[in-house]
Image (cartoon, rainbow, N blue to C red; front, top):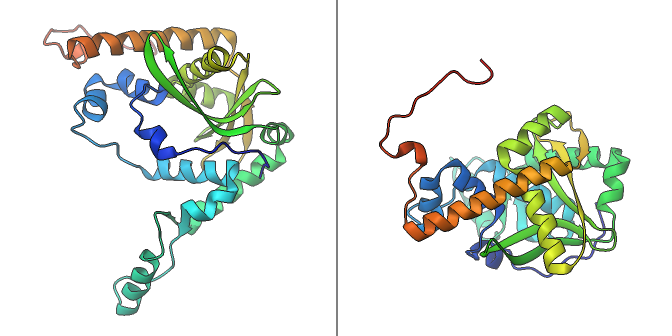
Length: 268
Protein backbone atom coordinates (compact mmCIF):
# COMPACT_ATOMS: atom_id res chain seq x y z
CA UNK A 1 0.00 0.00 0.00
CA UNK A 2 2.75 2.43 0.94
CA UNK A 3 6.31 2.54 -0.29
CA UNK A 4 8.34 3.39 2.78
CA UNK A 5 11.88 2.47 3.80
CA UNK A 6 11.83 -0.36 6.34
CA UNK A 7 14.10 -0.69 9.35
CA UNK A 8 16.02 -3.96 9.60
CA UNK A 9 14.48 -5.50 12.71
CA UNK A 10 14.33 -8.78 14.56
CA UNK A 11 10.84 -9.07 16.00
CA UNK A 12 11.74 -12.05 18.16
CA UNK A 13 14.59 -10.12 19.79
CA UNK A 14 12.26 -7.20 20.41
CA UNK A 15 9.44 -9.21 21.95
CA UNK A 16 11.81 -11.35 24.03
CA UNK A 17 13.49 -8.24 25.43
CA UNK A 18 12.37 -7.90 29.09
CA UNK A 19 12.10 -4.09 28.97
CA UNK A 20 8.80 -2.51 29.94
CA UNK A 21 6.27 -1.64 27.24
CA UNK A 22 2.87 -0.01 27.26
CA UNK A 23 1.23 -3.36 26.55
CA UNK A 24 2.89 -4.84 29.64
CA UNK A 25 1.76 -1.88 31.71
CA UNK A 26 -1.79 -2.48 30.49
CA UNK A 27 -1.55 -5.99 31.93
CA UNK A 28 -0.28 -4.54 35.22
CA UNK A 29 -3.19 -2.09 35.29
CA UNK A 30 -5.62 -4.95 34.70
CA UNK A 31 -4.14 -7.47 37.15
CA UNK A 32 -0.82 -7.49 39.05
CA UNK A 33 -1.31 -11.24 39.49
CA UNK A 34 -1.49 -11.73 35.72
CA UNK A 35 1.55 -9.51 35.22
CA UNK A 36 3.49 -11.65 37.70
CA UNK A 37 2.40 -14.88 36.02
CA UNK A 38 3.34 -13.67 32.53
CA UNK A 39 6.48 -11.62 33.11
CA UNK A 40 7.93 -12.26 36.59
CA UNK A 41 7.38 -15.83 37.79
CA UNK A 42 6.48 -16.84 34.22
CA UNK A 43 4.05 -19.53 35.30
CA UNK A 44 1.85 -18.62 32.33
CA UNK A 45 2.50 -17.96 28.66
CA UNK A 46 0.89 -15.19 26.65
CA UNK A 47 -1.98 -16.67 24.66
CA UNK A 48 -1.91 -15.78 20.97
CA UNK A 49 -5.54 -15.01 20.14
CA UNK A 50 -7.09 -14.98 16.66
CA UNK A 51 -7.42 -11.18 16.95
CA UNK A 52 -3.70 -10.88 17.72
CA UNK A 53 -2.88 -12.99 14.66
CA UNK A 54 -5.16 -10.85 12.53
CA UNK A 55 -3.51 -7.68 13.88
CA UNK A 56 -0.08 -8.98 12.87
CA UNK A 57 -1.42 -9.94 9.45
CA UNK A 58 -2.99 -6.52 8.92
CA UNK A 59 0.13 -4.63 9.98
CA UNK A 60 2.22 -6.65 7.54
CA UNK A 61 -0.44 -6.31 4.82
CA UNK A 62 -0.52 -2.50 5.17
CA UNK A 63 2.95 -1.52 6.36
CA UNK A 64 5.29 -4.24 5.06
CA UNK A 65 3.55 -5.95 2.13
CA UNK A 66 6.83 -7.27 0.73
CA UNK A 67 7.09 -9.58 3.77
CA UNK A 68 3.55 -10.94 3.47
CA UNK A 69 4.51 -14.14 1.64
CA UNK A 70 7.40 -14.94 3.99
CA UNK A 71 5.34 -14.45 7.16
CA UNK A 72 1.85 -15.73 6.32
CA UNK A 73 0.24 -18.38 4.18
CA UNK A 74 -3.40 -19.18 3.38
CA UNK A 75 -4.48 -22.66 4.40
CA UNK A 76 -5.62 -24.92 1.55
CA UNK A 77 -9.19 -26.17 1.46
CA UNK A 78 -9.11 -29.86 2.28
CA UNK A 79 -11.07 -32.37 4.34
CA UNK A 80 -8.56 -33.60 6.89
CA UNK A 81 -10.91 -36.46 7.82
CA UNK A 82 -10.14 -38.15 4.50
CA UNK A 83 -6.94 -39.86 3.42
CA UNK A 84 -6.44 -37.41 0.56
CA UNK A 85 -7.12 -34.42 2.81
CA UNK A 86 -4.66 -35.63 5.42
CA UNK A 87 -1.97 -36.07 2.78
CA UNK A 88 -2.65 -32.61 1.33
CA UNK A 89 -2.44 -31.07 4.81
CA UNK A 90 0.81 -32.88 5.58
CA UNK A 91 2.35 -31.59 2.35
CA UNK A 92 1.16 -28.08 3.23
CA UNK A 93 2.64 -28.29 6.74
CA UNK A 94 6.00 -29.26 5.28
CA UNK A 95 6.13 -25.98 3.34
CA UNK A 96 5.34 -23.62 6.26
CA UNK A 97 8.93 -22.65 7.15
CA UNK A 98 7.76 -20.76 10.22
CA UNK A 99 4.93 -18.92 8.46
CA UNK A 100 1.65 -18.26 10.26
CA UNK A 101 -1.44 -19.92 8.81
CA UNK A 102 -4.33 -17.58 7.98
CA UNK A 103 -7.63 -18.23 6.27
CA UNK A 104 -9.05 -16.67 3.13
CA UNK A 105 -11.61 -14.63 5.11
CA UNK A 106 -8.84 -12.83 6.98
CA UNK A 107 -7.17 -11.92 3.69
CA UNK A 108 -10.49 -10.60 2.39
CA UNK A 109 -10.88 -8.52 5.56
CA UNK A 110 -7.42 -7.04 5.01
CA UNK A 111 -8.32 -6.15 1.44
CA UNK A 112 -11.52 -4.48 2.64
CA UNK A 113 -9.60 -2.47 5.24
CA UNK A 114 -7.02 -1.36 2.68
CA UNK A 115 -9.81 -0.26 0.32
CA UNK A 116 -11.29 1.85 3.15
CA UNK A 117 -7.87 3.40 3.82
CA UNK A 118 -7.45 4.19 0.13
CA UNK A 119 -10.81 6.01 0.12
CA UNK A 120 -9.64 8.31 2.93
CA UNK A 121 -7.27 10.96 1.46
CA UNK A 122 -5.89 11.87 4.89
CA UNK A 123 -4.93 8.27 5.56
CA UNK A 124 -3.26 8.09 2.16
CA UNK A 125 -1.15 11.13 2.94
CA UNK A 126 -0.05 9.64 6.28
CA UNK A 127 0.93 6.19 5.03
CA UNK A 128 2.82 7.66 2.09
CA UNK A 129 4.98 9.96 4.18
CA UNK A 130 8.71 9.14 4.01
CA UNK A 131 8.80 6.97 7.11
CA UNK A 132 10.56 4.25 9.05
CA UNK A 133 8.40 1.16 9.50
CA UNK A 134 8.17 -0.73 12.82
CA UNK A 135 10.79 1.57 14.31
CA UNK A 136 12.17 0.24 17.61
CA UNK A 137 13.21 2.48 20.50
CA UNK A 138 14.94 1.47 23.73
CA UNK A 139 14.99 4.05 26.51
CA UNK A 140 14.44 4.71 30.22
CA UNK A 141 11.47 6.31 31.93
CA UNK A 142 11.20 6.73 35.70
CA UNK A 143 14.50 4.80 35.83
CA UNK A 144 12.80 1.77 34.28
CA UNK A 145 14.22 0.29 31.04
CA UNK A 146 11.47 0.61 28.42
CA UNK A 147 10.89 -0.22 24.78
CA UNK A 148 8.51 0.86 22.03
CA UNK A 149 7.80 -0.27 18.47
CA UNK A 150 6.35 2.51 16.31
CA UNK A 151 4.27 1.49 13.30
CA UNK A 152 5.41 4.50 11.26
CA UNK A 153 7.82 7.26 12.24
CA UNK A 154 8.30 10.17 9.86
CA UNK A 155 11.27 12.05 11.27
CA UNK A 156 11.15 14.66 8.50
CA UNK A 157 7.49 15.49 9.15
CA UNK A 158 7.53 14.92 12.91
CA UNK A 159 4.68 12.40 12.93
CA UNK A 160 4.17 9.03 14.60
CA UNK A 161 1.41 6.93 13.05
CA UNK A 162 -0.22 3.95 14.73
CA UNK A 163 -2.70 1.60 13.06
CA UNK A 164 -5.61 0.35 15.18
CA UNK A 165 -8.63 -1.84 14.51
CA UNK A 166 -11.88 -1.22 16.36
CA UNK A 167 -15.40 -2.56 16.59
CA UNK A 168 -16.54 1.08 16.53
CA UNK A 169 -14.21 3.58 14.80
CA UNK A 170 -16.54 6.53 15.45
CA UNK A 171 -15.21 9.33 17.72
CA UNK A 172 -17.29 8.11 20.65
CA UNK A 173 -16.42 4.48 20.06
CA UNK A 174 -12.70 5.04 19.71
CA UNK A 175 -12.69 7.36 22.72
CA UNK A 176 -13.80 4.37 24.81
CA UNK A 177 -11.08 2.21 23.28
CA UNK A 178 -8.43 4.80 24.12
CA UNK A 179 -9.30 4.63 27.81
CA UNK A 180 -9.97 0.88 27.93
CA UNK A 181 -6.72 -0.09 26.19
CA UNK A 182 -4.44 2.73 27.36
CA UNK A 183 -3.80 4.25 23.94
CA UNK A 184 -3.30 7.66 25.60
CA UNK A 185 -0.47 6.12 27.65
CA UNK A 186 0.99 4.64 24.47
CA UNK A 187 0.90 8.01 22.71
CA UNK A 188 2.54 9.79 25.64
CA UNK A 189 5.25 7.12 25.89
CA UNK A 190 6.03 7.20 22.15
CA UNK A 191 6.05 11.00 21.84
CA UNK A 192 8.31 11.44 24.86
CA UNK A 193 10.62 8.59 23.82
CA UNK A 194 11.15 10.04 20.34
CA UNK A 195 11.82 13.48 21.82
CA UNK A 196 14.24 12.23 24.48
CA UNK A 197 16.00 9.59 22.36
CA UNK A 198 16.12 11.27 18.96
CA UNK A 199 15.64 14.96 19.81
CA UNK A 200 12.57 15.20 17.55
CA UNK A 201 9.26 16.74 18.61
CA UNK A 202 6.48 14.63 17.11
CA UNK A 203 2.72 14.49 16.98
CA UNK A 204 1.05 11.09 17.18
CA UNK A 205 -2.04 10.12 15.23
CA UNK A 206 -4.08 6.92 15.11
CA UNK A 207 -5.47 5.45 11.91
CA UNK A 208 -8.55 3.53 13.05
CA UNK A 209 -10.43 1.01 10.90
CA UNK A 210 -13.37 -1.36 11.42
CA UNK A 211 -12.60 -4.95 12.24
CA UNK A 212 -15.56 -6.06 10.12
CA UNK A 213 -17.46 -4.81 7.09
CA UNK A 214 -18.56 -2.21 6.20
CA UNK A 215 -15.00 -0.92 6.50
CA UNK A 216 -14.39 2.74 7.31
CA UNK A 217 -11.11 4.48 8.17
CA UNK A 218 -10.68 7.50 10.44
CA UNK A 219 -7.81 9.55 11.87
CA UNK A 220 -7.60 10.70 15.48
CA UNK A 221 -5.04 12.72 17.42
CA UNK A 222 -5.06 12.78 21.25
CA UNK A 223 -5.52 16.20 22.81
CA UNK A 224 -2.91 17.74 25.11
CA UNK A 225 -5.17 17.05 28.10
CA UNK A 226 -5.51 13.39 27.09
CA UNK A 227 -1.75 13.08 26.61
CA UNK A 228 -1.10 14.60 30.04
CA UNK A 229 -3.54 12.14 31.57
CA UNK A 230 -1.68 9.37 29.76
CA UNK A 231 1.64 10.59 31.16
CA UNK A 232 0.27 10.58 34.70
CA UNK A 233 -1.09 7.04 34.32
CA UNK A 234 2.11 5.90 32.62
CA UNK A 235 4.39 7.20 35.36
CA UNK A 236 2.03 5.94 38.07
CA UNK A 237 2.14 2.42 36.63
CA UNK A 238 5.93 2.53 36.29
CA UNK A 239 6.20 3.55 39.95
CA UNK A 240 3.83 0.72 40.89
CA UNK A 241 5.97 -1.69 38.88
CA UNK A 242 9.11 -0.57 40.73
CA UNK A 243 7.38 -0.85 44.12
CA UNK A 244 5.99 -4.31 43.44
CA UNK A 245 9.29 -5.50 41.97
CA UNK A 246 11.13 -4.36 45.11
CA UNK A 247 8.63 -5.95 47.53
CA UNK A 248 7.69 -9.01 45.49
CA UNK A 249 4.04 -8.26 46.22
CA UNK A 250 1.89 -8.83 43.13
CA UNK A 251 -1.46 -9.02 44.93
CA UNK A 252 -4.18 -6.62 43.75
CA UNK A 253 -4.98 -3.92 46.29
CA UNK A 254 -8.61 -5.09 46.50
CA UNK A 255 -7.52 -8.69 47.23
CA UNK A 256 -5.55 -7.87 50.40
CA UNK A 257 -7.92 -9.64 52.79
CA UNK A 258 -9.77 -6.52 53.84
CA UNK A 259 -13.49 -5.85 53.48
CA UNK A 260 -14.04 -3.20 50.81
CA UNK A 261 -17.29 -1.24 50.69
CA UNK A 262 -18.97 -1.23 47.31
CA UNK A 263 -21.40 1.47 46.23
CA UNK A 264 -23.60 2.05 43.20
CA UNK A 265 -21.67 2.85 40.01
CA UNK A 266 -21.37 6.45 38.79
CA UNK A 267 -23.59 5.73 35.78
CA UNK A 268 -26.43 4.36 37.95
